[in-house]
Image (cartoon, rainbow, N blue to C red; front, side, top):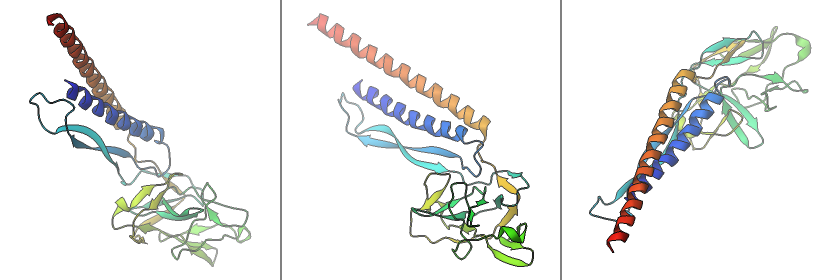
Length: 244
């Protein structure tokens, strides 16, 4: 019976972690470029606490990895000249105090020096890894499908779009961005850049709410099982005491 309690408790811990991830997905349903996440689970074999001819080892439930769906989100037209969205695979590369980061959030603006930056003030990098500087006196910026930026006849630069052969190399890094946690080098992405658009989150709210209900019911079911096992253990001890 002790083993059943421990297995049930391990299941509840994983369900709580899964609920946190689902809640985070729902909270970011309106976050530009956000990618939906889900929790992967695994069994964790361990020696049983008490063995009464039961299986050995006992398989507990454990959280494994967080899977991330990098699928395309819907493109929302804003009309702002510095709003950009990638249609297809790839990421914008930005320079932060902690090193380069990659993001799908194309809500760009300019800083007092004219540099193209993110909402956090991080410079957006060109395809060659340099900063992009816009001269406000030269008028409106036009951006081509390949990321080339022009002001009239003047070439400003080319917004970099980068992809990875294995997207599992990307690790969540805050500010709706990712860092390269591997030795893989980013490659130029053969995607289209859409000026005046932003990519919506690819979270499907109805699906996430359905998952939340399922997880909540699984947690309650496990809690009832634990209560039943605990009550059975208590009554067994009481009966054993009366026999002695």
